[in-house]
Length: 125
Image (cartoon, rainbow, N blue to C red; front, side, top):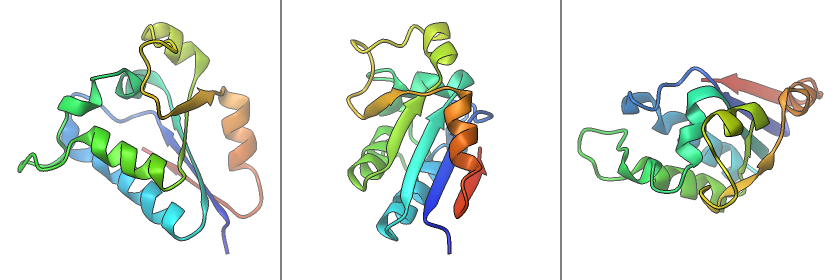
């Protein structure tokens, strides 16, 4: 059985909120199943790590729960959030303007290394 889930957020469009909640919900479920979970933010999804950005995004039409709330749930469950250094620079993400849930900067080698481990499930969105 897998012991870890590694998620790459690369192709999601932060301007199309309907699909944005699923990765964080699934990460929270995996963490609740005692799996180690890491989410890597790259490309445009890096914007979700900027303070105030995800607070105004609602994946559902009812607008009951913001994307940032989904992200907080995942992080509180133990999910780690990492950003690609190049994407952070591209989107002017710094320690000062990043959400407190950001756990650090990790590049492609860290993602590939984690994804290549035995017993790891890799999901991409």
